[in-house]
Length: 166
Image 1 (cartoon, rainbow, N blue to C red):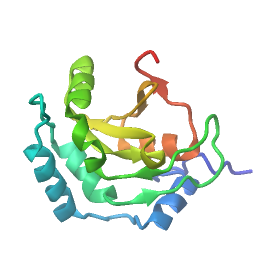
Image 2: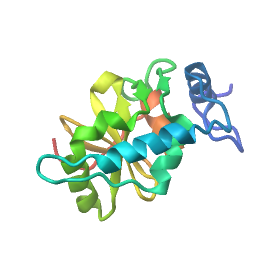
Image 3: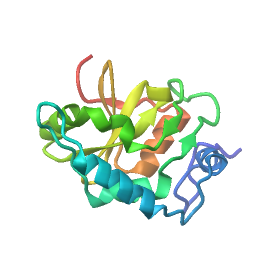
């Protein structure tokens, strides 16, 4: 019997994740670059009271263009933990320039906001290599080497890897 959480050869997403993405309005080739550019401008223009600024780089702008403004609901029960809903909107992390800068320094890269999970329970971020992280009250979590795998982790309830102690 076919496991719906396994990737068929040559596809980006598992069938259950692809179904959740389509239900949210995503389709292959989606590219909303105007919105992504507006977000990039807003983030570049923002400076925290202490002078921290956001990093903006091609990998995150591409993710915003493809998945921006989508609210993706978990397609079913989680495999290891409760699955998370995902909203791709980097302004959810607008006031976290220092937090994201600190994470970037710890990882020796730049980190930019990507969106949020579970109605604001955590902020999603991406580094300049395209790796995706979640930051919540318990710590920092590694979700995957790219947005495709991070969405699979979040939407199917795969246990992410903790980066920091709780």
